[in-house]
Length: 303
Image 1 (spheres, rainbow, N blue to C red):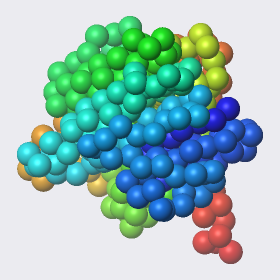
Image 2 (image 1 turned 180 degrees about the vertical axis):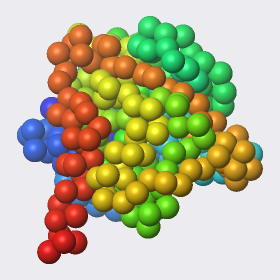
Image 3 (image 1 turned 30 degrees about the horizontal axis):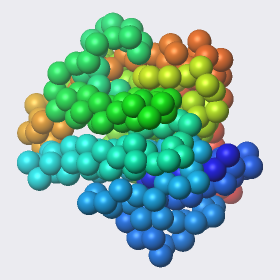
C-alpha cells in the first residue's frame, strides 16, 4: 500500500515508518519542511496549517501530527495544542473531501484523554467523553477527522495512552529521574495508568489501516492498566534503582498547574475493540515491556 504519514519524523512516526517499510509498504512522509528527507520515506511532502496537503496516490493516511501536550499549559501552549489538532486535521480532511481519488482509510490520532478521569471504572471505546481541556480537545480533534466519512472513507480514531519507548514519550522524562534514584509515585499513587509499548501502538495503527472491519474509536493501550505506584516500582526495578521518593499532588499542581490533572487523574482504559478484532499485543504486561526497552542498555552499562 501507499501510506501517507503526518508526523512521520516524530517519536511514534519514525517507528511507524520503519514498521511500514519492513512490511513492504511505500511511505510518503508529511512535514513542515518538504526538503527534509525523512528516513525510510520514499518522498516528503508539505504539511502546513494554512493549506491543504497533496495526498495524491495515498491509499491510506495515518495522521499523527500535533503539538506535544507535555509541559506547563500556558494559554499559548493550550492554543497550540488545540489548533495543531483542529486545523491540521481539518486541512487533511479538506484534502480528502476535494480529492477525486481519496484514500480508503484515515487513521487519525487521538488520546485517551478523551475519557477524562475514569476513576476505578474499566473504560472501553463505548464510554462517553469526559471533562477537561484534553477531553474537549480530543472531541474537537475527532469531529474534524470524522468528516472524511462524507467521502466514503473509513475513519479510525486511535486513542493513544502513555507510549513507552527508548527515545521519546514519557520515559524520556521519567527514566533520567529514576536512574538518578529520585523516582517515585505521583500523588497518592492509586490512580490508574494506561500505557502501551511503542512497537504495539505502531503495529496497531497498521492493523487498523489493513483491517476493514475496524472503524471508529480504537483504544491504543495495553490490556493491563496499572496503578501509578505499581508503574513506578516496575520502572525503578527495570533500572535497578529504588523508588522511594514521591511527588505530592499539591507540589505537582503548583509546578504544572492545569497539566497536573494529566498526572493525577485516573485513566483505567482497556483496548476492547482491538482485542475483539484480533489484534495481539507483543507486550501486554508492563514488566515485559520495560525489560524489552531497558535490558540492552543495562547490559551495556554492566559490561
